[in-house]
Image (cartoon, rainbow, N blue to C red; front, side, top):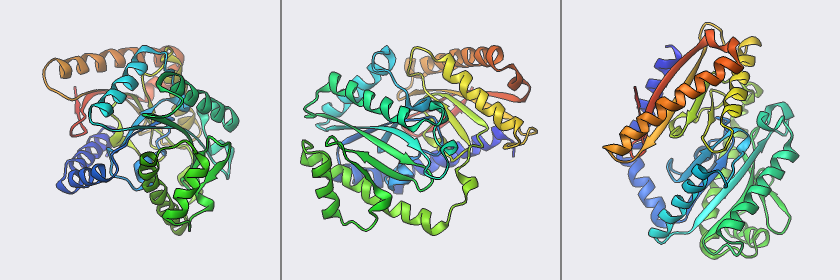
Length: 344
């Protein structure tokens, strides 16, 4: 199976699972018990699958991905998306939690975030600054929107909470804490956090505890934690493409979109040159736009995807020309109600 066929089959499988009765009812049940809307601002690294790491239903945590987890609330498109997300939650009487993430590896810094040159201190500083921007815009008293800095340690898939009290809490070192003990820990870490936020954050922590135990039991090899990506996804709607070391995902969330595209293309080229991926398979660049309704919204999504593909391929051809002989391009749209990708 070539890469394009792999992507097609992967999406069909994921869309079928997402729309199955079991999945739909699981999401409905979970939402009824834990109504807080949760967004995760993440790096492009495909290992960062928070639904898997927290054992929550896919579709509960809304992901936004960009190289290094770098986002700019002043960039009109991203700012509008965040405002619309908050307004959507308010229209349903829900609170909003924003997980501002960074990632790193305890075992080897070069399995960490390449978007920050493997500099974890710089990644944390970026996350803290972004958290502060959310407070500037949506309120520092956290009545409706609560931004939290969360580290993701990719060797164990552990979450690391950065409290407003200055402490850090690594779940991997507290796998036996009970729900009651975790709730008390959240009171210490986030003294101003309302009970509704704590109640809806606890399931993520309990799920992460279970997941870490599974990772330990599986004795996951180091190879599984190394960069071996051969797919570059550009745009939005890539929830179905969460795969460790298979894809890097760049969202349209900053003024300079060319730089992250070229940087990511250079990572794929490096993977090819160093034999981490086979040259005969090459790489695939997938550009995607999303829609929720038929008619003009879907047609506009198609235009966005085409335009983004033209921009991305031009950037790669000029900045990383060595990659072009190995590159295939796929352009399409994603129906957010089904997660189905329609290739154009």
